[in-house]
Amino acid sequence: MALIETLESAWYGNGRAPWWTAPLAALYGGVVRLRGALYQRGWLRSVRLPVPVMVVGNLTVGGTGKTPLTIALAEALRERGYRPGVVSRGYGGTQREPLLLGDVPDPTQVGDEPCLIRASGVPVAVGRDRPTAAQLLLDAGCDVLIADDGLQHYRLARDVEICVIDGVRRFGNRRLLPAGPLREPLERLRRVDLRVCNGGAAAAGEYPMQLRGGAAVALDDGRTQALADFAGQRVHALAAIGNPRRFFDSLRAAGIEPIEHAFADHHEFVATELEFGDGLPLLMTDKDAVKCRHFARPHWWRVPVQAQLPEAFYAALLERLGGLRREMGSPAT
Image: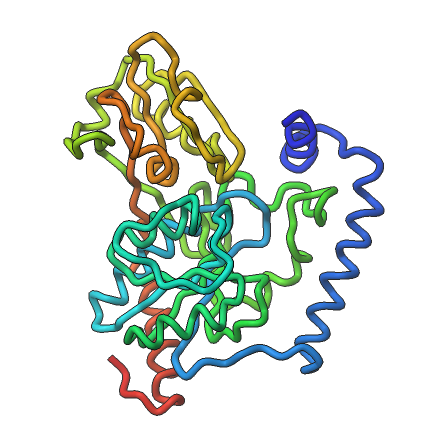
């Protein structure tokens, strides 16, 4: 954790990155550019599917709000008559072979984010071989696919690229890993179709997104309570996400006093880690709740959020999808 904190201080603050990060960043950048060139020239081939494929991703490591946006996209497409499915690598899970998720998937097997997306009602397939996993969704009747965290996974050909940007941290020091937070050079941003800014002030050409949540849901029995009811109280706050600070700050904005417990992204919890011995409520993200539900206590709560975007974003997306469906020989919805 000390190294991670040192790097993040250099990426997003006033700290200095260790000397050894500069040569590694140069090596990493060379590999990224070579891989991109191999795909562009056809020496490495992407698999193209007979339905539109959109990818949701980011240029930086850590959480930017990709999963809430993926869920919002799937819901918006269903409302407009599409049959969307989500394909994911299943990061953090043990599953290696492509798998179509059931109604109650195991997060230790398939990863926490796929479980959270599946809980919204959309079909989800996981697999390190994304094209093969995507075929499971086609066999299940999906007519448009969303690749969660798929911006750098070029083996699955895409028709629409959506990049999510952290509106507060932006691109940090704008350097490549590990000297900075960038997965790809910043000029990659010019090639994406739609840019979404989560929080903060959206720059020109970006669609603003806000994560809204006004209620807490008990893990043990599903009862709900207004988040405002916790205002003025001290609570334990749990976050094992890419950017725990965003969750803690959202609780403070609601007037809550969080005792912060930040864990590494995709951390697999055991019950003893969450026994604090003082009886205070424990509030956690939805992503963490899918891993803690089977040993939940009565005073544990999840705080679900929904991604809110302007209609102009969906209009731009649907215009692209309509054109793609006509090109592929399917009537636009």
